[in-house]
Image (tube, rainbow, N blue to C red):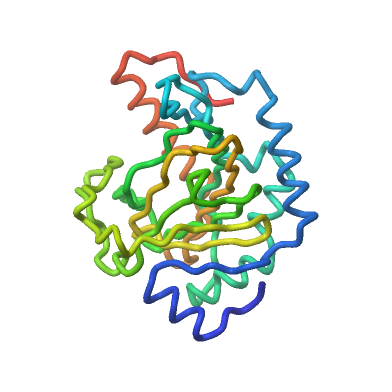
Length: 255
């Protein structure tokens, strides 16, 4: 990865997403995958009271199962090195026309049977949330239709926020997009995809017997809040604890 070409920048601005094949060498992805395997075996972290953890229902049994760590960088040196890779930051700087700043990081494991995510945009209308938000997807395993590849809908990012801007997460009605235009991000280890925080996207259930582990690193332009990852997670944890409290869950923690 390096400075992107004018055509790549134009395509991203038009479609709201971009795929870069062979962006990282296999040894770096293998090391990140190994450390991801070590992290998921840390049983002291896997708790429904730990707000680092995300959960998804099994699509057939309805059983709640572990799905993601958010954040992940403090659990894996290899993942942190990918998130701050100079070539990646240079490529993102080409899209922004200025420095890209890491904002958020998570690892979605998506084990077999995981339900997936409904149609949504990543942008959340908090006063501090950057409108320049974009996400880089880095697969640690082959990602395809069978195991629930992320599906993006090109062009809709140009319409901005498509749900109420009230600071909450909202799924979008399917009629918001022309579902026939969806592009499934079939990626191999080493490939990456970049998409805007305003791109509607979803993912189908994992119907395979394989995990679909993907890193999701999100960034903002320097002029849109600067380096604010630590501030974001402080705010995010306050928000999460308030949401849990609405359901009587007052003993949650971050570990």
